[in-house]
Length: 191
Image (cartoon, rainbow, N blue to C red; front, top):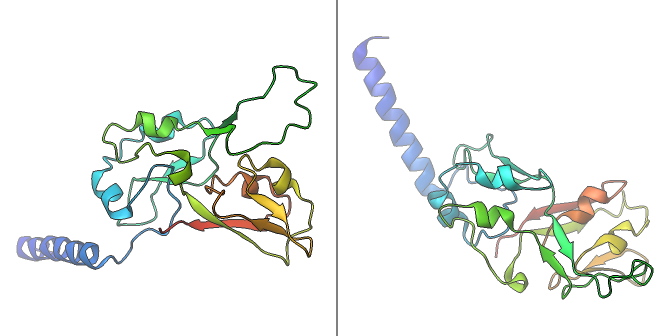
């Protein structure tokens, strides 16, 4: 390839990249860490430093190396850590402690580590990371998801299937990670 061909190729690459970005081809359908309000604003303000990945206590945040549009931005492949405030310090009294939205807090270290505010601190009620789905063909009705949900967002319906209350669920993915038959999956929240 001569010099002219090389320059034409480079110009073509930049032009096609700009066009694909403008029309949204290649936009990520991945699940983001907490604090992403708008995908386009997030992608444009994230500097791809990886600090959110470094501070994630579960190792659930990874950098996206699969999508051109979002190359190097964080995705939530694992689950979000949370902390429970116990009602009483006695371990005996907390054996059957039912977790609830009022007592559960996400760790949000990723948001605190973000130098550009691409990840924004929001009230817990406004955080939506993903939407859970349950594959009834795989589900064994073990109810581990019901027991471990930190936000009390999963109950059992009249037919005995786990049912998600999307008003309570923030999409932390804890249920999907701990589901033995892997019947629970999550899709990106697009609200």
